[in-house]
Image 1: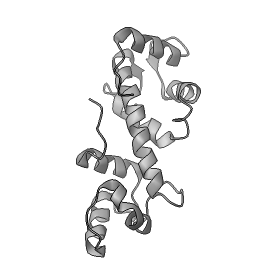
Image 2: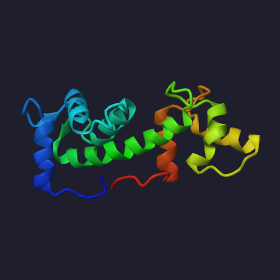
Image 3: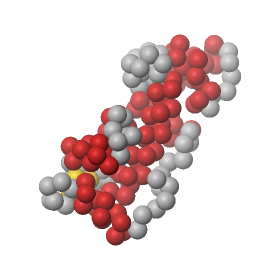
Length: 152
């Protein structure tokens, strides 16, 4: 959603998300609205969760109108990242093994083909050292390397 909405348009969409009309959005309301309004994003639960957490700048567990425009931008940003993540996650287990990483490392903009270079890159991204790249680790790497343009 590269096109910026004006404040009135943001308020109109916010009101659609705000099912109970209390002026703040819970994760459940966001999830429900995404399913109804953005069905192409609905299956990307990790992306929705990541956008929700990143947009909640007040850290109160809710998205208010001031945070809402950022939420919409982040939903689309993390959706794009999740699509890349899914391309790498060949077996669909929501984590990228080293074998999957080797097959698709070019999608992440990683140069080099030697096993040593690729293993070092994999280990750098796998910050919890679990032997797999998780979506959160993938997002951290993407932000650090500017894999996709992060919304302002």
